[in-house]
Length: 210
Image (cartoon, rainbow, N blue to C red):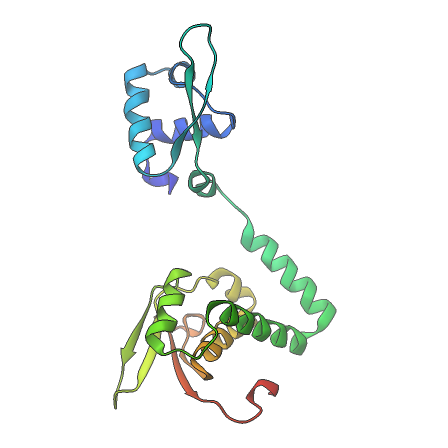
């Protein structure tokens, strides 16, 4: 996100990152060596984009100074290493539990996620709604014979799943549990597909035990 901003706006956000209590317009003008008018203009744009917010005020002996702070959205725009931690955790769990137990764990996590979202079986359209809220960019696609498939254009665990394909079991269990059946993974980005394509099939007896 930061790469899409101008140099001055990036510098402004970096300045606020180092001053979590907030900075005034005068502080920012001095730090960035630009005019107060320019600071106001950049702050207005960044507030509109949800990256900067107004914080508290600071007494000056005259009129209190308004302080400006980063929003949580802006803080998340700076580099994070969540995939690194997730990789380390999965490697550790695999070493402790073994591959089969890790697969079962991923399936259980998918089922738990589904249970937190819905208490009853839902159709593909509703499943897609939940997936899109999580960032999958999914849609219902009718291939033939009016049989619906779920097509995801974005895999939210892509970098993690490239290293640990077992993570896909979470997606399969999530979709299958929401739809009350088994999930067939017809196309997968990890296997060279352009999208991840899923089809719900009627659940077979004891499928959760396989």
